[in-house]
Amino acid sequence: MEQTYIMLKPDALERGLMGQVLSRIENKGYKIVKAELKQLGEDLIKEHYAHIADKPFFPELAAFMTRGPVLALVVEGDNVVEGMRTLMGPTNIKEAQPGTIRGDFATNMTENVIHGSDSTETAQIEIKRFFG
Ligand code: UDP
Ligand code: MG
Image 1 (spheres, rainbow, N blue to C red):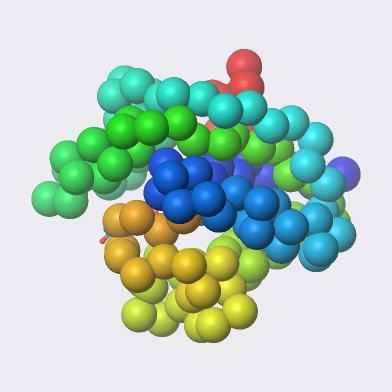
Image 2: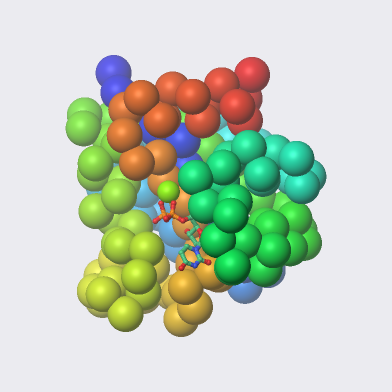
């Protein structure tokens, strides 16, 4: 069965959104097969966000992602990588429709509640990165 790496970002935990976001994942029929609260460090964030580490917003993103714990998840289901990206909504929150997690909960391009792997290849790498 296909798996993806999902992470509820520090804003989701600070704002008490964990239950609502997990419900959406479960309501869709996906199965949470691993879950762990983790305090991430700068090095892991640099590795995870290597594709944008040279962007001007990166320092703000790194500070955000390390300011409190995240909930790291492995989520399983049919076509779950693409399905979770649809549930999440797009990166640009101006384009995130109501009904999506980012569309309903995020008002900021950086603090956008949730991460989800962008391909099945990335999912395998990210699951290894965060769960070993
Ligand atoms: N991000 C940001 N400003 C931008 C683009 C991205 O702060 O202009 C942050 C945001 O938290 C996003 C993360 O960097 O979720 C990773 O960016 P990516 O392009 O991989 O978007 P995602 O896959 O999370 O939708
Ligand atoms: Mg991404």
